[in-house]
Image 1 (tube, rainbow, N blue to C red):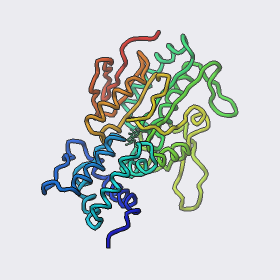
Image 2 (cartoon, rainbow, N blue to C red):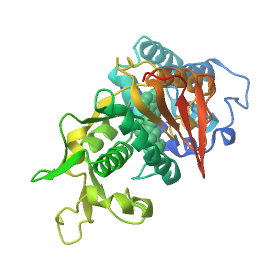
Image 3 (cartoon, helix red, strand yellow):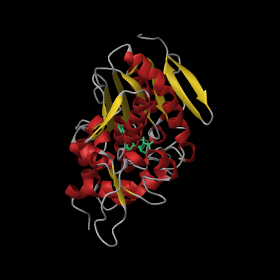
Image 4 (cartoon, rainbow, N blue to C red):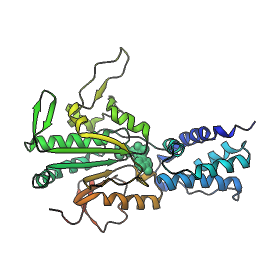
Length: 331
Ligand SMILES: C[S@@+](CC[C@H](N)C(=O)[O-])C[C@H]1O[C@@H](n2cnc3c(N)ncnc32)[C@H](O)[C@@H]1O
């Protein structure tokens, strides 16, 4: 019997979630949409739906996902699929139904100090950023876009706090490490996924070999004190310290159509996000993010990403890492 059409969204979400593993493959390993049989009306509708995901969130769903959807839709009448696709298409990217569908497709793999060479390079550039800020607003602002469960945002906040401490811009009070007046540090973590953001806001992570705390995290562990065990068999947990939570906040944001923050940032990180995007979405998203970097500021992409239009940036190379610096200076 055909499933009632009101279950379509749930069916789609299940299908998309089951297909998520295909998205973790490198883009070149993901074949473009091409059906074995000549496209019929059902094929067209599935493609329209997947195009809707790509248009609204940039995510490129590959062939197995399209075929899986076709199989799932097999018992549903063509008229019902048409009505459902048309209904979804009339909704904007910010509609909860699209967000739920997109969320079922997103991959939230992340950990503290991921891509350590690049973050070590970022840390090495922090003293210059602090020197510039000392002559300006005494404010450092960083944006982690596609922050997933927050580990990246907390990592850069921890690196920045350590650099500020080294530069003598902090003090240790009863509340832990605090910035000396008039210094301020703002780290914004942004992601399209509300579920990932809820975890980011909590800032509580499991420990263990494949957890948020892998070997790379060792140097930052002092920013994540252990929590008391919740029970005999409960996993050991660590939580972002209050000093980190005071400087990091999280907000929902879609790189493709979210309004850019009005003030540019000293550094924008968007790492391990574009590997799931179509080529055109990647170009478009990179152009948008580039506008959020102040002249002289940094853009950090994932290790497999290239900057499509690097004219406004110069590449800074370090062993095992590249970072882009926006040309010009506002000093
Ligand atoms: C693999 S995680 C990367 C986490 C972190 N940046 C890192 O490198 O460890 C990719 C994240 O990008 C987010 N994402 C995907 N499409 C997005 C979009 N259009 N706008 C904002 N975030 C998006 C996903 O929700 C997911 O949390």
